[in-house]
Amino acid sequence: MPKGLGLPMSIGIILFFVLNMTLDGILPDGFFGIILHIPLFIVGFLACIFGILILFRDRFVGLLLRSQSRFLVRSKALSAFAARAGFTYVPAPGGAPPSLKAFANWKRAPKEIREAVKMLETHGGMDDALEAARQAGVMAAPATVIGGTPEQRAIYANQATSARLEDGFLGEREGVTFAAFEWVESVDEAPDIHHLVIVLTAPLRLQGVTQLRTRSTSWPRNVSKADLDEVDLGPQIFSRRFKLRSNDQTEARAIFNPAVIERVAELAHGDKIKATAFGQHLVINLEGGGDRFDLLNLVTGEWSEESVRTAISDILELSDFVGEAAHAFMVRSAKR
Image 1 (tube, rainbow, N blue to C red):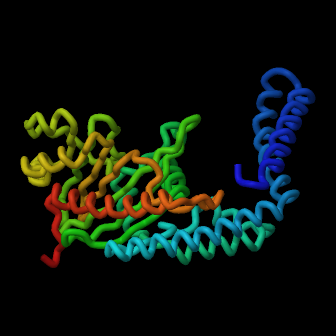
Image 2 (tube, rainbow, N blue to C red; image 1 turned 90 degrees about the horizontal axis):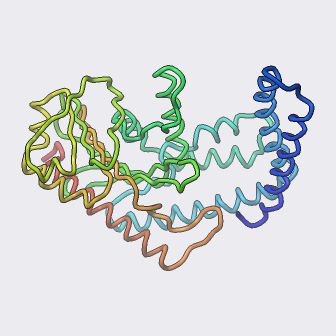
Image 3 (cartoon, rainbow, N blue to C red; image 1 turned 120 degrees about the vertical axis):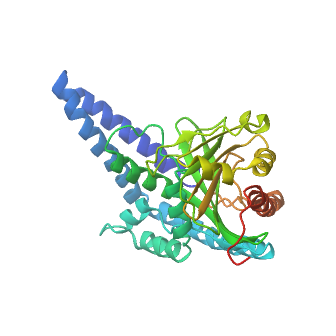
C-alpha cells in the first residue's frame, strides 16, 4: 500500500461493508430483493470510491503528482539506455488508458487528472504497432468475457488490453525494423502476467493467415475469422514443442520451412510463445518473464542499482530476441 493511503482505503472498505449490510437489512427477501440489490450494490460501491476520493483528495492528488514526477524520471533514464542500444523509447504506448481519459472528461474531474492525461498522450504513440498486435489476436481477451456479441467482445478486449500497456520500443536490429511493447494480463487472485509483444514488418505482403504457438499456451485469437487448419510439417523437433495452423498451407510451409523451424525451436527456450503472420506483419507474443524494464516503481518510488542493471539487461535481451526472431523467420527489410 502506498504511504498515506492506508487510512483512506481502510475507511472505504469499512464504509462499503456497512452500506452492504444495511442493504441486506432493509431490502425484502426473495427475488425482487435480489434484483434490487444488484444495482444498489454497484451504485454503493461507486459512491464509496468517489466519496473517499473527495474526502482524501489531497492524499490522492499528492500520490498522482509524485507518480508523474517518477514517470518523467523513469522515461528519461530508459530513453537514454534505449538510445545506447539504438532504439527509441516510448513511455506510454497508445497514450492514456481509455478509462483514465473517460474520467478526465468528467466535468468535476480534478485538473490534475486532466494534466496527467495530457502528459501520457504526449508520451504515447506506436498506434500502428498496437493495431497490428490486436489484428494478430495475440492480445487475447480475458477468459471471463463470455457475454455479448462478437463485436462487443472485440471492443472489450481492445479496451482491457489498452488499459495495461507499458514500455514501448522502436528500432532496427539485424536490418529489420520493429516495434515492441509490454502488456499486462490481470488474473483473478493471482499475480499479473506480463507479455512482451514484438511486431516485425515483412518485406512482402502475405496472402494468408498463419499462426504459431508453443504447446504450453493457447492460440492467438482468430480476429480475421479465416478458416485455419492445422499444418503438419513433420520434424519432431518442431511438433514436440509447437503447433501451426493456417488458411494457406503452401504459404505456411514457405514461411516455416525446415531451416526456420530449427531456429524457432531454439528461440523458444521453454517460454510460452505465440505468433501470427498476416498482411505485412509478423507479430510475436512472449508470455511471462516478469515485469521487464522495471527501473523505478511509479507508486512507491523504489529503485536500486539492481533494478537499473536489470532494466538495462532487459533492453539488451530485447535486442537479442529481435535479432533471433528476425533470423528465425527470415524477415528482411524491404530496402535490402
